[in-house]
Amino acid sequence: MSIQEQSERFTQVMTDFVSYVSKVLPDDVTKKLEEIRGRETGELQTLVYDTMFENQALAKQLNRACCQDTGVIQFLISCGENFPLIGKMPALLKEAVVRATKQMPLRHNSVETFDEYNTGLNVGKGTPSIFWDITEGRDDVEIYTYMAGGGCSLPGRAKVLMPGEGYEAAAQFVLDTMTSYGLNACPPLLVGIGIATSVETAAILSKKALMRNVGSRNENENAHKMEVLMEDAINNIGIGPQGFGGNVSVMGVNIENTARHPSTIGVAVNVGCWSHRRGLIRFDKNLNYEVLSHKGVTL
Image (cartoon, rainbow, N blue to C red; front, side, top):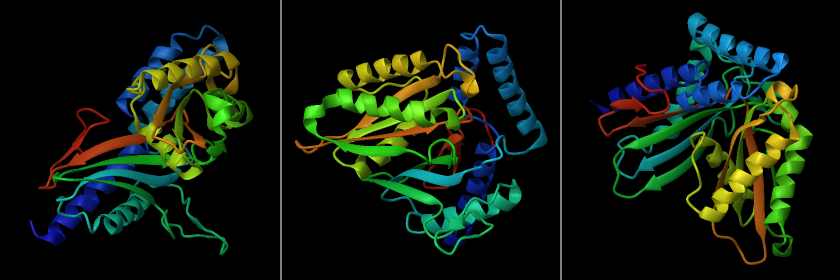
């Protein structure tokens, strides 16, 4: 294929993928929702879950987005240095968002700051958000597509702690955040926590944590212990599905971390709502694709 043909194929596949992610939840999220529904005993709580699953069925049947807030489209990319479209990818992804906005359709969620007008295309200055990692020696690309809603991951919070406050203060910050805006994020939630050296490094890690599968674990034993403790602590708050109270408030807690400066502990928290519209797709150098988050899907 020529570069023009490759570009068109990539753009159309990503258009279809963004559209698909807007209506169908990834396999791990669906499986977890089915599991925790069985842990609720209240009539209201089980009714909420029944409504969630009916919503999912109708979204697929009617070919419509499963949530009215289709969010800000965000892409987290792990790209090989030899992938043929590496230099064109930002422009191609932006075009894919424009096409998906018209094709699905998606709600218009990109408002130009200060000028205060909606572009009507879900793109604008700096949108969609694109975060990159470049990998030496590879010629493929993996792309997470995420719909960041106005009630869940967009109101994330970050803070830099003094080292004397310890990881206990990081845990307290997360719990304070959950009790103050957790209800607005449409629980049960997937909680992403970043612990690093500053607000910006912690913030991007907390978003990357939301891309991890539900039920996955941090490879560091101490970090994983904190994941387990935080999940238990947030569940004990008793927020429950859609904030109506219940036994389970979160699908899980994922922590991502880096090394830090000796004088600081940066902590950030982002949450994904029950309708955690995250998808992962892989392209090889010939633009063949595989959808990794939704098994058996052909776009």
